[in-house]
Each structure stands twice: as structure tokens, then as C-alpha cells.
Image (cartoon, rainbow, N blue to C red; front, side, top):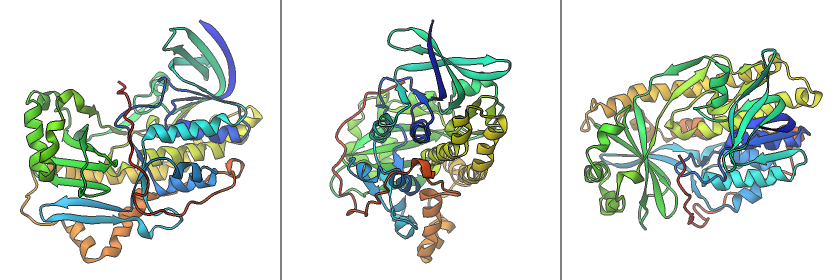
Length: 434
């Protein structure tokens, strides 16, 4: 084992929360090291939505113009396909602020942009292919991490004044710390796969729900990133039905996709997302803080997980930059992060639990009547379109949005909205990661 020194803050995980936190702390003058277990950011079927509140944050960080150059699709309305056609359920065009759309951007491009900006800051270090294997404790306090280089196999230690776990719902650090978690039951898992997009297809994001089936299509330019919902724990059983039965399921659910289902040649192309919904009772122990999915795993409902994790990171940087600069982060300082982010977490998870219970559980168990007509909430939104602004605000901005602290701001460059879908389609495809 090699001893690789010390840092002010070590961040476990180079996802959106980890990279935003690393950038902000570096701009605060904190020596920060981000450890990412993969050699690059190319993971397929990750959340690829960047919401208006995050777009505003990028402007405040001086990265708005750079982000606008990244190939992306832009969605200003949320829609669902019913038996009678496609209807709107959320209108982002009336949101406050300069961004009235959701940007659909490959997450690897978003993370590359954050990494490039972070490397321009003194005191920032990003170590790729570095997997955290455990925590270092002294006198009951977490004082750093043990890690392993996935290329060389060499193990090492990195000591830090604060360790922040941004390593997702299966967090190594959270498990090692033994922090108690409250689990909420979920009715579904998700199958992710791709389908070609053709001229004349609907643009943006579309949901489809009917008896026993549900799917969501995310417009990625030349293809749809497609989520097919299955009953929780039924992955192995559904796979035994074979690829042809799967093609028929999707074709029956969304008939206008039938002419391209042959492009899914094997169920090996269909990736499982094990959906979980939980949150920690306490987000910290002395020397360790959990944020993002490590503190509160989110359902894919509404696609708000990334936005919530980024806002956790912003709040963490604002509240802990001064204690980190002083070289002493107390448990009371860490508790302030949870208090700040508890309400938006509970609100969004409560809304997800409501959708799970009232819509998805009934949908996947075939307890809805497809001939019963338009659901009442959706019918009200069609009668009173102003109501569509409510889900747009919840999804696009969310409760208690966070703004960049003064020390992290760099010449804000708000970017006017270009024509819808003005950017070129995304061409590159990542390698699959486990």
C-alpha cells in the first residue's frame, strides 16, 4: 500500500454532485480531490436531464456559454400519450428566470465540462480509475479513505479533513459508516434501451401509461432513450419471454414504434435499473457527509435526481467552505447541510411516492381501465392550461433552489434561448459500464 498524502476534502464519486462540489470548493480555496472509479465518464443510460435551476447555476459559474455549445436537445413542454393522442401536462415556457426548458445532454459531456472548469482551479485534483474501498478512522472520526487503482491494482490511502460521499445509491462510504436508511417500497424497475428516432416523430419527452404497461421516451436527436417500466423484481421472469415478446409489448404500447423494434436484436441490449427510493435518517458522522443519491436515492419519476443532487452540492459548498478553510469541520457543521436540504428532499420523494401508489402500482398491476377516459388531473390541465405550470416548476426548478455562492461566481453569462432543438444531434455512443 502506498501513502498518497492528504487533502482538505476528498469527494467520492465523479458524478454531477461530486464534480459540482469539487469545482465550488476549489473556487473557495479549499484543496479538494475527487475520486472516480471509472477511467472516463462514458456510462450509457444515465440521467441526462439538466434542469432550468442547474442551467442558471452554470450561468452563475460562468459556464453558460460553454454549456450552450454542447450538443443537446431542449424540451419546453412535458407530455403524455393517452389512448386519444398526445397531451401536454407541463409547460416550462412560463418559468421564472432565463431558462425555460430542460436540456437533454449526454451526462458525459456535462461532466467533461465540469472537469475542465475544475482543472483550471488551483488545489483541485481529479483521480480517475480510483475506487474507494473503505474509510480510515481514528478515535471514531473518519479521517480519509482507502482506495485502489483499477488499472494497476495498487492500493493507497488519502487523508482528508472531510470526506463527502457522492457515490450513489450503492454508496461504499455510507455502508462503511453504518448510517441508518429508511427504505420506501417501489412498484417498478426500469429497462433502458435505445430506439431510432425518425423524421416526424414527436419531439421532447413523452410518457405512455396503460393497463399493465408504461414507458417514457426521451428525445436524444437521432434516437429515443427509452424507459420501459416492469414490476419490481420481475426482470428475470420477463427476460425468459424472449426478445420477440418484448418487441410485441412495446409495439402494442406505442404502435408508432413498431416499425423499428427489430433494431433491438437481443435483450442483452436492454439494461436494468434497480429502482430504489430511500433516505438516510442522518446524513453524516464525524468527518463524513453523504449527499445526492448517497443520502437519498431517488426514483426516476420526474427525472429530478440529478437536479436535487447538484443543489445538495451547492448547499454543501456554501455551508462548509469556511470551516474547511479553517481546517476544522465539526459534526454540527455537517448537520446544517441536512437541515438545509431536508425539506426539498422530502417534498420530492413524497410526490414520487404518490405517483408510485396512485399511478404506477395500478398501471403495472393492470388495475386501471384503459377505456375510462382521461385521468382527472390531466383532464383539469387540459381545461385550465395554467395548471400545467405547477408540474413544470416542480420538475424544472423544484423546492428551495440553490444559487452559486459569491466565492464561486465567474462573470455570469446568461444564454438566451435559441430556437427549439437548434443544436446538432448527439452522434457518439458510449461504451457500456457495469
